[in-house]
Length: 285
Image (cartoon, rainbow, N blue to C red; front, side, top):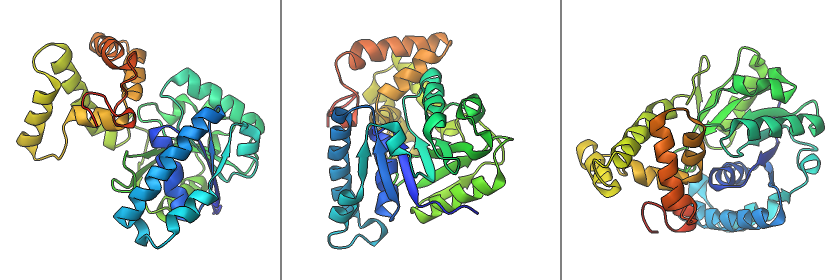
């Protein structure tokens, strides 16, 4: 079984940064890739905040100076060939748009070493939607993380019919080595396990809001009181970041999803209110 030591994460948004930092915290050599220096600068700020959170929460035992050592060890690049030159595993966390992801894999396949395993963090697309773009379908699968990964530390591993079982096992071993609980899927399922349950909740909440039945605060309060859940669906939207649900809604042919996309664009996206990461979404932070 291939040993994974060097990990490159493509995309340093909210979840991409968490994926990269989680691996770095547990001792993997991590390179964070994004398109330009401004995005990498934002990633550095996210990593600094994560170091403080991980230290305060005592993740993996914490330890004096661990945060500083982890931060110092993360590499940054906006040159794709450089970023993946020695990667054992590349985890893709680019926007949830099929065409963007397909182009990313086409570009990646042209420069990555033959040894490199590719993994998509897509929350809604099947790996089969992307495998032909990778140029190595036997070394490709889905690896989906939950938000706030250091606390909700699941890693859903889902291959295609082409995925080499040894590659699947190597990625499972990587997740265990980076403080995660691997969730092994036996076959492909859009949304994997977590989002197959979560997305219907979020869609129902969006329908109630756009349909004018109740406001976001009321919907969240109803869910929290009625189920004992710590947060409601619109709080979850804010944690995810509103760009991802907007991209998913825009890509859908469903009329309700299109209405929600228009609502998000008018009230949040155009105003730069993208959720927790920007300090305001459905709520202020």
